[in-house]
Image 1 (spheres, helix red, strand yellow):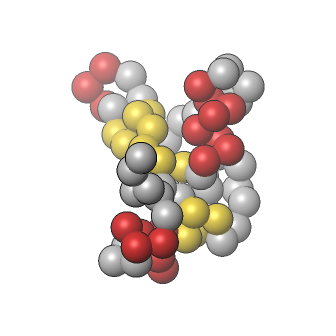
Image 2 (spheres, rainbow, N blue to C red):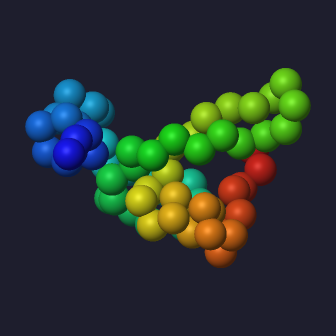
Length: 66
């Protein structure tokens, strides 16, 4: 099973993949999961944390508008 979001795969990222999540504003968490934001032609991708990815998938949270 792939472990792309663990140690060796994220070492080359800036700050080893850590930062502030734009959805929950939690600091110093791994920001590794991409989510599309926007509608129509203005779709952009943002990186969010693992818990927010799951919450968005199940409809518990909404993505902030840019």
